[in-house]
Image (cartoon, rainbow, N blue to C red; front, top):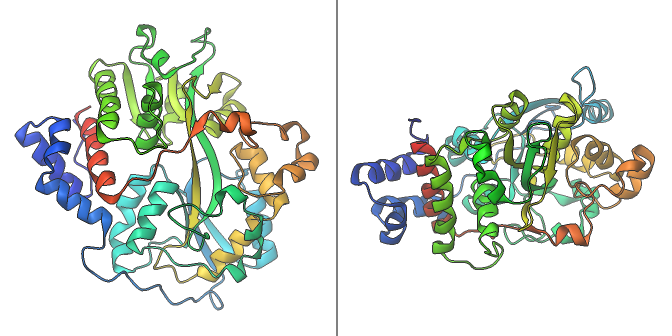
Length: 401
């Protein structure tokens, strides 16, 4: 059995669930004291004033630490990041780039105490998914941008300029976007897959991986069940999907539930099929041979963005703004997109791609058209209470697996 999560509120709720043997549905329905505590933690700062932003020392400290996900920036054969090297040369800012984000929850667990105290987390920039950014903004854990220092932010695609969690993009800017769908080893699964239900075929028992990102794994199952995940669905719809997830865990159909580390399981063939992220499979094929295929399931996939944020305790906000401005140049955005194969948020990048890699101009994983976008769905923003309750239900399954 896995250990308890780091977050004390989730620990308390899971311990209560284990000791009382309540079902997941009754746990959500009864609104236990633990769930109430979780809701309070996710909705507010517990009555305390939000921490104060650190004083900016960028003028005298030309350094910057950037935390990101694996395989999420252009990289050459020597392991260098060409666009980042160019930025350092152009700006005089030395960047420490860390592949330190494997999963939104685990990353948050590592830095939440410093954030709550307004302390430096060790990162001046981090790229996190929409829902986590929504939480950080709600709690007052990020700094507001000086958009005059990011003039290239005008190149942000119109459709991304006013999300409900950050109207006007004053505290976040998209880095890359992507789809969650399904992938498989073409040699071992020659007939391919079309739906999430195909993952539950007996021939794949014990060889299926799914993501530890709740909104992607449960979101895909909900779509398979006919739920519009962008709409105002009720808790019972979520729990119907949780029941399917629990069954596949209990039956041994699902081997692993992981963040970015799921790629290693595909490489080793511990898993032959997975719920996964779009650009990862392109990168995996480039690194290890053209062995895997990705599709958006027939019932639809999820779509999301990972966003730049400046943690409240960073003393180098201006340096971070300079880097964001650099990456919002269409030519630079196209260079990154050509390597990572995720959706670029920068207007003009598609035209710039004509010169860099013309074969990618119509690539639907980078520049999706309306037809492709119609198959992808945004998992609606949860309230703080929903985030706590539903997240606890999901985590309870992971802890028992």
